Image (tube, rainbow, N blue to C red; front, side, top):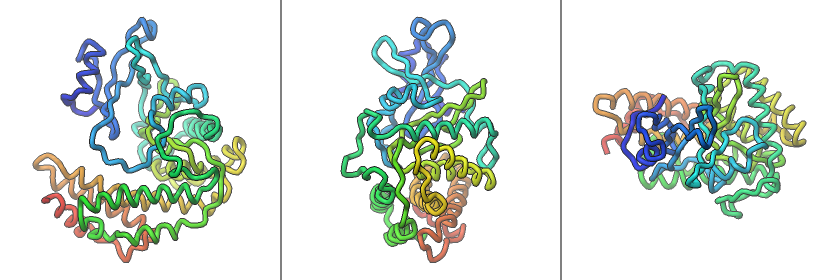
Length: 359
């Protein structure tokens, strides 16, 4: 559902492009961009009605994940014809390039988190992974903004994962520890947590790198009226360990246990057909990578919770309790990985958040 309208330069630009404020939809729900959907001129797209997405980056965002590509638009342009089910780019007369808006419903609105995903859609998700496996660093000429020294050598999965841990430690934990002194410690995590995390995930097998979407959850899949599955929001795409993409997908999708196990095995079969070695050591490494995702969520969700506590009057208690429940859940899930002495009780988590709410 579209969020409440706000007055902004992005909205003004969308109105200017459409010529009619009443035909604009948005802003759509999204963290990285302020997004509006606008109808596109028939002289450009033809007689069939087509809508495009106009997006502007939100300012002063906290980034919880590494970014690899300088432009999502340029990446999508380079992937046209290589990845099945990605948004088409449409060039307007003024040189502006918009993504075609995929008309349909998100997978999450059709099948909520924890529910099984129908076979026809699972097959299309596996096709996406196969397409991604074929895209390598040498086969994709797109500008990257990550520094060469921050890129792991081909196949060095341990180095790839350590770069992700370093990002969580430096950019999520240490920078926000300065902003919120004592917050992390009040919830049982500190500098030693990263030492324990590194020790817990050590020993990954080497696998050939490929393109990763790195954010494949139910709201980033759109199902159209012909049951075709489209993949949106390529903002966090990167090159790296293909098993990490599977781990992220499984962690975010929340498949039922039996379907998750089957999905992992089918993923291995599909990837080995396209890029042999992509699933090497998966039985030992997939649990390690899932544990990393659980640990990563502890630090990102703590920071997100503080931001979400800026709630309307009267809703404070509800929002506070909801965030406390979520935080205690992720702390419990990562307790062994981070070597926590114990998980704070729900009242203790709520009290820690309340102290920062008052500040």
